[in-house]
Length: 377
Ligand SMILES: *Cc1c(COP(=O)(O)O)cnc(C)c1O
Image (cartoon, rainbow, N blue to C red; front, side, top):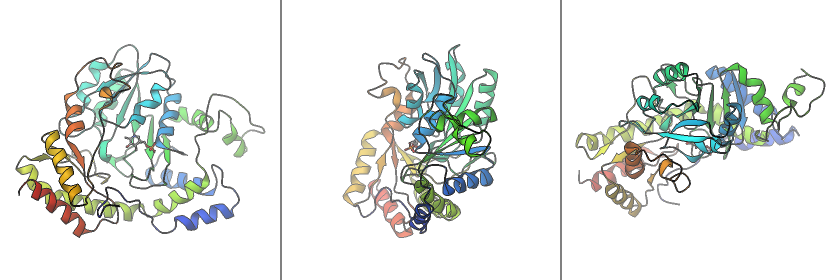
């Protein structure tokens, strides 16, 4: 492992104890004690109408795609600068993805570019809160309402982050979260679908349970269960939930530490932005920072490659991020050819710095010192 890796999963201490408890309870399939504790945590802390743990955010998005009733040929408007899972879920249902450009000041979808992409076939607007920083939701919600489109949030990176005081993931009809080991709170692999529009709750439970009404059966609402809809197995083992619950109990501590690291980077690197060497994260007034990621945008791909190589020579691991999906091997030929210049710029120039709970102040300082030495400051 590098002296300073890019990421290091943080164990809060009780993970294996809770897993042991889950195993002892002899109910280790889905929706056991710890899954219920996690659901209650999210519904209480953030006021989500319905929280459903899934095996990944990818799976949560696949549930959202089924719930949105996408038919082959329907169009989904989404950012191009994102992870494949954001749109892959809709591809699986035969959707056409209409990619929008990012903002110039941060990688979120440029809300002013959405409306011109709407056609009679558009069904869904899919937003991603990049680095846990909110998109301009009032603007986007107004477009969705005006054109009667479903709004779905990929909130994979956005736990404990807010838009005008409202938790991300609670603003669209549904929101999808990730607990992959690279996110703020983790369970190895893991995710959650949050349902805000109550009309989808019943069907979401069915889709998550292989198309059966087993959830209602377990609550005693019906006296037998059977096959009532399409579905799959989207619920995680209670062993996963046990791990996650330990993380959730420590959420405030994790967030405090990550924000401390983020601010230390930002204070130290401000001078690079002042000298126009890089663009630093922009957090609009309506958004909070959940310190999911610290990134910089270099002035060229050559400068970024040079910086990453320089840090690597000091055993510090900085990484680039997405290759815009409109330019991917899989979608290039299906994209309508519009150029998305901001997405291209982030693909070529954005670099993410190490950020994990156990990163010390001294380590942050050594990374920023090497970055400044690269830029000869
Ligand atoms: C991490 C991530 C995902 C996928 O999450 P998994 O839990 O690994 O499936 C989806 N979208 C975005 C924006 C992500 O950052």
